[in-house]
Length: 111
Length: 113
Image (cartoon, rainbow over all chains, first blue to last red; front, top):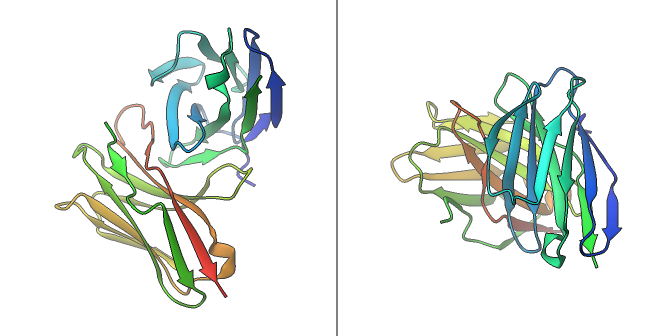
């Protein structure tokens, strides 16, 4: 158990819809990262938050957005969903020792 | 542009033998490297890391070697156990800045009894 929690574990929705994925970092970790793993792909960095502020962006689509709240949990919002957005979405948190610890992931299926 | 590459999609090793997983990178700015293990339907689990100021780091059965001149790292698992069967990802980052991880495509390791 990494100490990072993600909900929901599975999400099935239709094209055009909007969903919210939630992540709670390890106790004390200020940084949250979001990654996407599509079928047969490695993990791709989407976005990072540190103590409530956006720190870095990767190849995140404009239809996707995220935020980190004062209690340090983070949400990833995916809108106008397309079939190609079906993937595993992982969040990771990092403290002060340069290592990211991953949550169990949310499997998103867009039908 | 794939900055981190794991050229072997799969590897099969007999139980008790050494497993060697390889990873190459192209970006010389990377200075921190990590290996993660992943089972199906679970998140990646951190195994071991190495900073670019070292060339070897050992933790129990796991040893990571870094060859900066060749831009190559490897993970050695000895002795290999059936529970080691999983997908292994190497990842690289820069300690300064956002420290976002750049992952390889993964190598599926199968340990045969």
